[in-house]
Length: 225
Image (cartoon, rainbow, N blue to C red; front, side):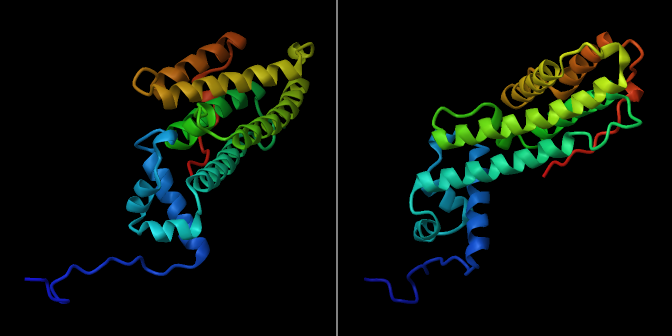
């Protein structure tokens, strides 16, 4: 006996959303899926299921998987850049430059731990990531380095004993250290918990200035968006 119309399961339809809200919903779903798998494993089926929509809805917004991946990577790169900007000191006048640098590195480790999926995409760039994304990451890093060097120059001017320090090399090495710690934090969290990473950072800054104590470090307050 064939099922009557009333007995057949009703097909689920996604609630109507404005285009931008639907796009954001699907990107959020893709991001959630990436928290459980690698980028090359991401499928349109998994994203549609996570969002609670049919694949036709997904394909209406993103015509191909490549288009979805490109949009997601770009969004997370922009958000990551905003987070980095939030960790940088706004003004070093009247502050201890080394304590500010310590707080910046610690804050960066904090945002990577609060957003491990995002920062894996940035600091441990997947082999399957498109070349355009890699180029955008390089440009973003260059921008961050330029801003960091400007802050380092101000800091050096406030520390007469550091007057011979190369600002460019100091900014570059500090950024590289922060990236390394962030990469370890999101790639091997059990081996490198926050406490171990922060203790290492503090030991470095203590070597640079024996007068710097834990209480000198400004309170953490970086965005974890």
